[in-house]
Amino acid sequence: MSKTIINTTAAPAPIGPYNQAILTGNMLFISGQVCIDPPTGELKNKDIQEETHQVMHNLKAILQEAGMDFSNVVKTTIFLTDMNQFGEVNQVYGKYFENDFPARETVQVSALPKFVNVEISMIAVKS
Image (cartoon, rainbow, N blue to C red; front, side, top):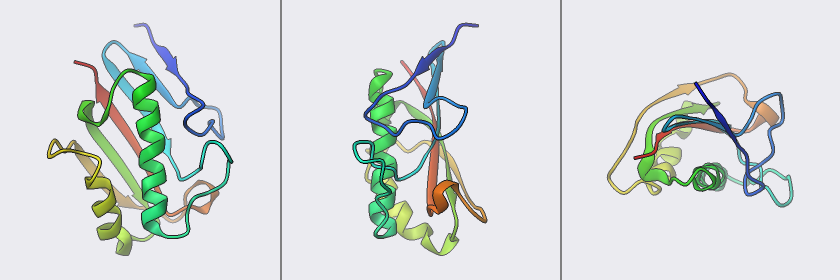
C-alpha cells in the first residue's frame, strides 16, 4: 500500500504529530479541522456560524490540494462541544454540498483542541 501525505499552506498546519491528510489509492483521509485561519494562525470563532465556515474552508483547501472537492466526500464526522449548536452547524455545513450529501455522524464531546466548538474530519474518494 502506498500513501501520499497531503499538506497545504491554505489550511492550518497540524498542531500535533499528524498530517492534514493521507491519500492512499483513490481514498483521501482528512484529519479533523478546526477554525484556525491559515494566514494568521488565529481562531475565527466569533460565533458558531463563522467557526463552521472556517472549518469548511480549511477542509476545502485540503480537498483541492488532493485534486478533489466536496462532491468527492463520502463520509464526515462532526464533533461538537454543545449539541444545542447542531442546527446552526448543520445549516452552514449543508451549504457546501449540492444535494450530494455524504454519510456522517455528529457526536458531542467534552472538549476539542484549542477549546473550539466544532471539528470536522472527512473521507473522500477520487473518481
